[in-house]
Structures are given as C-alpha cells and as structure tokens.
Image 1 (cartoon, one colour):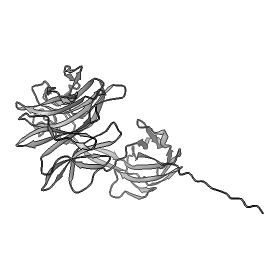
Image 2 (cartoon, rainbow, N blue to C red; image 1 turned 120 degrees about the vertical axis):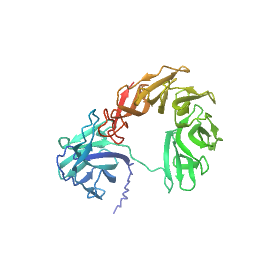
Image 3 (spheres, helix red, strand yellow; image 1 turned 90 degrees about the vertical axis):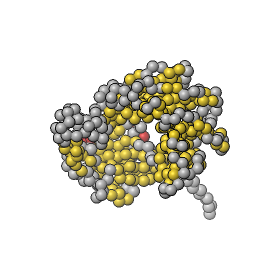
Image 4 (cartoon, helix red, strand yellow; image 1 turned 180 degrees about the vertical axis):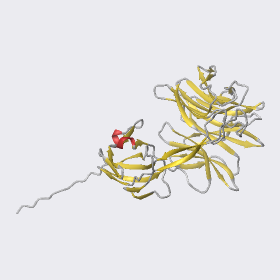
Length: 401
C-alpha cells in the first residue's frame, strides 16, 4: 500500500483598509426608518460608527444598525435690509455610517436597508467621486479615517503637521494643564517630545522642512506682556535652542509656514504695529533668516494669513477689513520680491479664514469661509441697515487662481 503525503499551503493575503461615509435619507420628506445590515464579499467590516445619529439610533453590531432620519425645524435669518423678523424652515437630518472596510481584494459591499438594498465595490469610488443609490436617497463617498495622535488629561490645541522628506509623520501642538499653563510638544510617528517647559503662555504653531532636511517648529509666546515668534529646528534627534524671530513691541501671532522646491521656508504671521494688525513674511534661505517684509498694505486690520509655496514662488493669503467688511487678499513672492496685492473677493459678504495650496501641476487653489453681509454689525430690531448676528450662515468657497 502506497501512502502519499499531502501538504497544504495557506497564504495570508494583506488586508487593505478603506473608510467610507454612507449617508441615508438624503431626500426624506418625513421621518423614515433606515435600519439595516451589511455584507462584505472578500473582506470584512473593520469598524462601524454612526454619523449624525440621534439618541434613538444605535450601532447593534459591526454589521447591523438602527437609525431613523428626521425632518426638523430650524431658525433661519438671511441678511436683508429690513430685517423683517426671523424665519423658520424645515430640513432633513439624514443619518449615516462611517464604514471601515478591510478588503482582501475586489469584492462587493451590500447594504440591505428598510428602504431598499444597494451595493458597491470600494475600487469604484475614488477620492473625488460620490455614488448615489436608491434614486438619490443614499450616497457613498470615500473619506479619510480619523486617527487619535495624542491623549491624556491636558487640553490640546493649535495643531500643525507635515510629512517630512523621509516619510515620517510630524506633528506639533500646545497643551494646557490647569495650574501648569501651556507647553509645546512635537511628535514623530507618534513619539512625543516636549519643546518647552510647563508654565508658559503660548498660542499657534506651524511646521516646515528646509532644503537640508531640518524640520522647524514655530510658535508664538508671550513674555513680559509681549507676544513674539519663536522657533526650534531639528537635525536627527537633536533639537536646537529656541530662536526668537520677531521683536516688535506689538503682538506677533498666528504663524503659518511653507517650503518651496528649492528648500526656502516662507514664514508668515499676523503682527501688531502702530495700532493695527498687518501680515508679515520672513524667508529662510541659505541657512539664515532674511529681514521681515510687510505683506499687507491696507490702512485697516489684516488677519490670519496662510501660505503655500512651489518652485521659486510663494503665495500668502489673508482676510482684510480694508473695505469695511472682511475680504480675501493675495500676494505672491517671486524672484526674491513681493508682487502687488491682488483682491480675491470684493463683495459685501463676510469672507475670511482663507487657505491656499498648489496642486501637482503648479496651479494655485484657494478656500475661505463665506457668511452674510454686515456680519456682526448692529444686530438689533428697528435699526436701519441692521447687520447679521454672529452665529449665522457659513459655507466654504473654493477657487482656482
């Protein structure tokens, strides 16, 4: 009798994690039950969380949930010269799922809800895509997965971060502990290091990497009643001593930084000079910091700059009160000098908190918040040309320059 030895081999395929937001009940006209289950082909549900859930909604297991959309009344007060009272409108409050999938390969994800069944393949949904299902009542979009990077009893604020040239994730932030004041921290791939002692008064952080691979952390610190900008840089595992980058008697706050392809660092901030705030810039090139440059030119307050940089060029954006309301301004640095200020927005609306970014082709993108005209001005009844209250409409505008 001949015996045969049979060997079995098993190969563990890598799991690829992807996260999606599934929204349900987008066009509901009345409260609608969206209870359901999930089945995953060639993979599994790694995590399931409720999005915009109410008290009666619940995640039952990693493949089952209970949720009911709502149609709710809300207070709406659009800007209008006569300010004829307030208005009430209704809105649909959809429900959603943050769905983390762990896939071994291609496969369909099927959601069976009280309002119908639909399915999708993760590969079908790119970062710029959204897929509608059930005649527009449901949609699926790809979304970044949030990840906790700090923990503890301290309050944490003012984060900034970058991925350095070696692919390491860098983060800086400020903690506040009752009785111990503020402290600046930086972390690399989750390993935190304190850059200052406890007991300080700090606000705002920014990060950048120069052309030699040194990572810089910038912050604003109050000493003897004055706020100034400070920095420390890193080579390997060694941090430099703190370096003071501003010395005006006015407050220098809200730093932002970017690096161009030639390794120059562009550091911008909001600085108080002669009774008003302006936007300033310092450039780090050839191992040293150049003198500060005045970026904004209006005779009114200029606020909260942001900066982006590419090959031989940087762009600073901010919001200005030059016209008696908040508008977005832009100014480029090119070939060693500042170009004229450009007006991005000129309407009566509230336009502020701008950000800026160059895409891979070198095209410049801007984003900012928009609110109603006369925001924050004389918001009371029976005042001619009354303004809008502080907690009114906000939406994000995006434009390519």
